[in-house]
Image: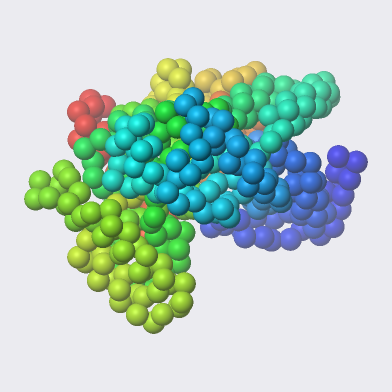
Amino acid sequence: MLLYPITWLGHHKKINVATKVVKETSGSLLWFKLLRKALEFAGPTFIKLGQWAGSRTDIFSEALCAELGHLHSDAKPHSLNFTKQAIVNSLENKYEFNEIFEEFNEKPVGCGAIAQVYIGKLTELMMEKYDIETENRYFAIKVVHPNVPKKIDRDLKIMTFFANMIDSLPTMEWLSLPNEVEQFSILMKLQLDLRIECHNLKKFNEHFDGNPRIKFPVGSMGLSSRYVLFEEYIHGFPMEKFLRIKDDLKRVDLCKKVSDPFIETFLKMLILDDFIHADLHPGNVMIRFMKLDKYETKVVTSEAEIYQIVHKLRGLRRNEDPEFITEMKNVLEEYEPQICLIDAGLVTELNDRNRVNFIALFNSLAKFDGYRAGELMIERSRTPETAIDKDLFALKVEKLVTNVKKETFTLGTVSIGELLDKMLGMVRQHHVRMEGDFVSVIVAILLLEGIGRQLDPEMDLFARFVFFVLMNGFDSS
């Protein structure tokens, strides 16, 4: 914090953030990097705080959020002995480790600020004993690091102290930092209980039961505990790698086979279920390939065949084999893509008030009534009294929506993601205090459209939203 004055120094530089260019002083860019390094050094809670702040473009500048998006944990993996003991102790009935796993990869496949992940193959005894309904016996096992709960509790107390101190400064009260830290504390404590992620997976699987194009891992509540999670391991082709090779495919129709079910999944989560995966970046989306029955209600491809298809594609890609693109085209022509969403620890549910607010805002945007949309954003914000230049804010939203309307008639598509992104910039400038879950939905839409438009440049999320609403029996108004 002592170095913050350097943000006022230096010349302005243009930097690329997502799909646009923003200006920041060279001093600001240096301070953003120093802040990221400090958060990484401070430990798991502060890393999570930075990752959370990086999604709040309604509060912080785009350049700062982009820098915080590069946060990563340098946490050292805990010992294998601790992992084995934690797994054995998490089960009510005491089993030997080799009674639980037929195979176990002793090297973690991932190590984050809070936990690390292993892959193991469950014994048939475990599958039967805990009534696990999946053909796949390979599971991802997430184990919380030792002493992390105590460290997080200590760090949250430090954050609360500084949030109250900053809140007492003139002109800073609009940020409502004590309230934000309280919300963040709840978020952190939820992430520490891995049974919640298991519950989320159960709920997602119930919501998408009967839709073979979408898959969530099967979690085992019986095997999982507060600090150990067992969930089905998804052997798929990562969406982030698919996005890198989409141009080489030179087949928009094949890319649409991937994007369409992904978009439909999000719209169902948002509109019908009000239970939204809150971390939909490409790294959490996997693609598998399968065949359906003639009614398109059931997967007829075995897990073994699905595994072999993905294994071959990943091997060709890893070895930079020139046959990879041809093989991917052949697979997409012969099989249907199955979209798999993993890492469901964070979900967003709009409360009744925010759900009404979201629908009212979207209704105003659909009617291209920008001024009313701006008024609604202020009226239904957390603290309407802290907003500055309210009429000017509404006029800016009106101008933005008018420009979008013109583009609609000339280009035929509306970039709802670009519209919401610009709105968040105005929200930040005019101190319009939005609810966290409301912003989470907007961020999810930005991520969704970013992925969708890479796969299908002609995709119109706005039109798809309206069509989905009408097809599911909502009143046309």
